[in-house]
Length: 231
Ligand SMILES: *[C@@H]1O[C@H](CO)[C@@H](O)[C@H](O)[C@H]1NC(C)=O
Ligand SMILES: *[C@@H]1O[C@H](CO)[C@@H](O)[C@H](O)[C@H]1NC(C)=O
Ligand SMILES: *[C@@H]1O[C@H](CO)[C@@H](O)[C@H](O)[C@H]1NC(C)=O
Image 1 (cartoon, rainbow, N blue to C red):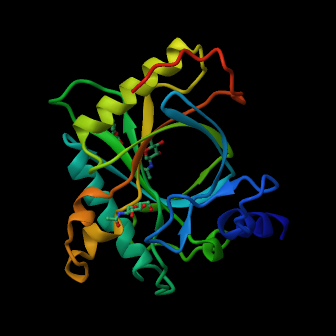
Image 2 (image 1 turned 90 degrees about the vertical axis):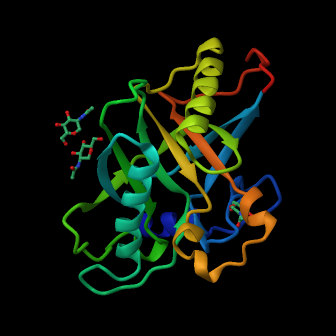
């Protein structure tokens, strides 16, 4: 029960402007629930965030192209939350959609991607089993992430561009992080599927939020000795 309450708090928890509660819901506009975090600090173009343990639905896709993997994986997971599960439960879309991207510069090579959608708070503990055998549950541990934000769509070229920029900054600042992969986080995924329900104004094309994350090793602090690399 403690876990359930903690999870509920983290997902919906009172969002105050005072310092007493650092959990934020900043990038939560289209969705009811988002993966909330504690902002540890913001340094020269990236953020250090703390995330609690969480449960997601996920699927693996092997493809030459990140865009294709993301689309195919997202579609399978979206079907799950739309009711393609053993109890026929429909769930509200959450944000962000996380794409685990292998660091691999070889273009003409299949790569393995994992796509994740956060389970809504009420399904964190006992989610209905997926019908699609490619869809599985995954528990992400409590973690600290280094995060860089950018607009537009989450595409190969810009996720590479911003992740390598972030990696360079982290390396110069002697930060310890897990290498071999990074995450791409998209906050505007719902419209990809429900395009016909949306008005396509200029903001739909411009006002989009994406991030790249490297997962920290250990507990990162915030040091003013970080070299200030302007973006
Ligand atoms: C999905 O891929 C990860 C590696 O990224 C692997 O550890 C895991 O076993 C795969 N799961 C399935 C169900 O294929
Ligand atoms: C991708 O996963 C498959 C099995 O799931 C594995 O055989 C293959 O080696 C992996 N490819 C890469 C590039 O890691
Ligand atoms: C995309 O998501 C971000 C974060 O939730 C939000 O600020 C923005 O308004 C969304 N953009 C569109 C076009 O809905």
